[in-house]
Amino acid sequence: MTQRKILTRRGLIHGAALGTGGLLLSGCDKLYSQPGFRATLESAEQWHQATQRWLGGGALAREYAPSDMSPVFRANGNRSVADPSYRQHFDQAFERWVLTVDGLVRQPLALPLSMLRTMPQRTQITRHDCVEGWSAIGKWEGPQLKHVLDMAGLGEKARYIVFHCADSFGAARYYESIDLADAYHPQTILAWRLNDRPLDEAHGAPIRARIERQLGYKHAKYVMRIEAVESLDGVYGGKGGFWEDSSGYAWYAGI
Ligand SMILES: Nc1nc2c(c(=O)[nH]1)N[C@H]1C(S)=C(S)[C@@H](COP(=O)(O)O)O[C@H]1N2
Ligand SMILES: [Mo]
Image 1 (cartoon, rainbow, N blue to C red):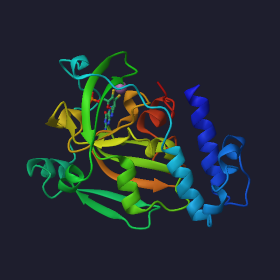
Image 2: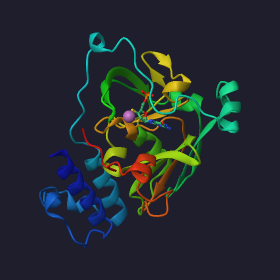
Image 3: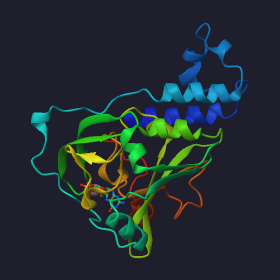
């Protein structure tokens, strides 16, 4: 069910690229025909933004009570990073580190960790499900990705958000990607705190993505750069993520 809804939404945003006079997919006919809605959409750009706001809604992943939190939140995959530049930032407590936001944006950004920690924050207690067969409930805190994307101003052609990570498996960098429905989802945050403490290295310091409606491997740790792209072709192996490229994992890993 979830998968179908997402595919329809993805179809919608592709449809939106054609502009106000273009093809409209059935899913949004209803919204589009509401009195007043169309009148406000004076340009393709406004249409695009309105569509994104609408896409930002949708089902929330379940949130839990503090009493449900797992006593230990296990770390998985890479638990440390060898990259020399990462090591230097780690030793400096990430004081000179910046998150790069670039690609199809109007204003590329370099955001210090202090800024990510002081923008409006979201806290959520959610269950993390790993394909390897374990789960843990933890409390995550950080700014919503949508705020960061709005600061940068997403270009009209942007369709996917790519998370570039500091760690590798052999020669292959870890990376992940999501569509705009997940990028604008209210629970999609750049977490810098887990269980009321700043992230440790094992869990993805200084920041990691939380993509709460999808499986664990989508939640990129050690995020150094966020890039808006039109297509995933030509991004690393072209399948949208490290595990997708190397092992054929599903790009949309809905829970
Ligand atoms: N950069 C990076 N992100 C990653 C991984 C990784 O190895 N490197 N492993 C993924 C997998 S499979 C899981 S289950 C979660 C584990 O997150 P945790 O270590 O905080 O439990 O991170 C995901 N994100
Ligand atoms: Mo995982």
